[in-house]
Length: 278
Ligand code: ADP
Ligand code: MG
Image (cartoon, rainbow, N blue to C red):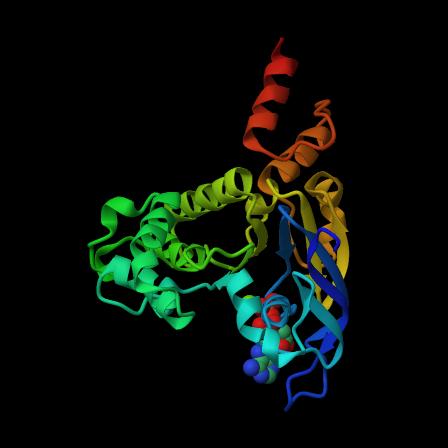
């Protein structure tokens, strides 16, 4: 089979009570091992699309395949959810047990992993997100970033191929956001876990392979971060702001400084400033 892990093919979806479609004719392919981001303002359809991708919702039109399995076919549902795990916005709604390691065990019990296999899986998952030292702590004593990393460990223990993050850093402080982002980048780079990162923080999207902009239920723009953010005015049309460094570059260029095109990160901006000072 192909190396496309998530294949969304001309998918539309309407909530029962709504005549308007929340997702309209969306096509999206996420290759194995990729790190894609979906950006879009509130209400643009990101969460609906995410739920279509792991079978929580079924398309009204079109089809979704995960690892070659059609989400429409009920016998695939549990295997799809195991292979493409989801991490949501609020860590407090995702942690159910009173001790961290029990929380990670919870999902394993649900999918019938043999008891003797559990301790190794739990330790590895917690270690992968840097939370092993907290295995015996109560989740409510942890910071937001730590809780979210425990939620990720719960998904990791199921040995998924992909993880879909739906605004998983939205409720965290900048430090928590950074620590979760770093952990996820590492999972992608070192273990080849496919990542779909849904966010409204532009600066989080600059490190992805590919960015998809959602607007009013549709994907209106896709490309590398450099392509998508090259012209900050273009995405303003979708009521989104380019990442801070792209805006700064634009402002400096307008003031006559020859900052090169395509600057997206703080490091790249520092490099440009150093070059110009020489
Ligand atoms: P986003 O995640 O980008 O904020 P959503 O996918 O949550 O967007 O919402 C897309 C559209 O679908 C919005 O117009 C929203 O009001 C509507 N919607 C979301 N959830 C429901 C629901 N459970 N019932 C009816 N309409 C919904
Ligand atoms: Mg949402």
